[in-house]
Length: 139
Figure 1 (cartoon, rainbow, N blue to C red):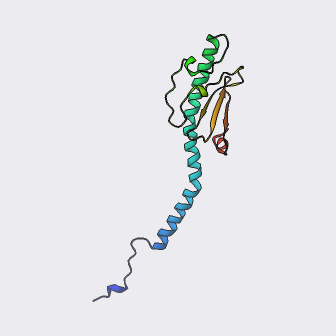
Figure 2 (figure 1 turned 120 degrees about the vertical axis):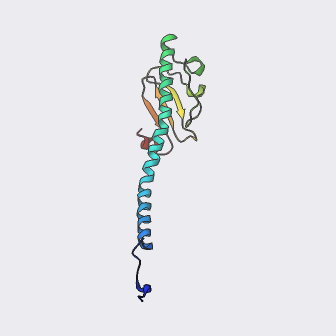
Figure 3 (figure 1 turned 30 degrees about the vertical axis):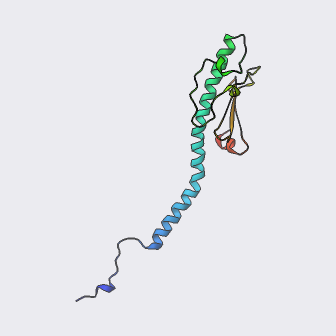
């Protein structure tokens, strides 16, 4: 009769091997997570940029139809803007009556006030923020 107590099983992993793999995965997540949050925020910011572009085009339509004047009233613009998911709702405060094409004609603020986008009639977009989020978004 053979002694089974001296036979060692070679199936499976040791606790040390499992811990090493978990630590390596943790390091990868720690390095990658900030990049993922920036990518997610860039995706959300695209909603605001689309709305601004629609408002800019509506401002130009109003400009040509009303004696070369931009408006400061949302009702004057022939545009239907759905309620934004990641930005504050568009109100008259979002519409600016720029005097020239290089002046801002619309703004939109990220929910929670993280940053604000503004657009000129010429299509130049600016980002303002108290943090470095605008730089991470490419502005």
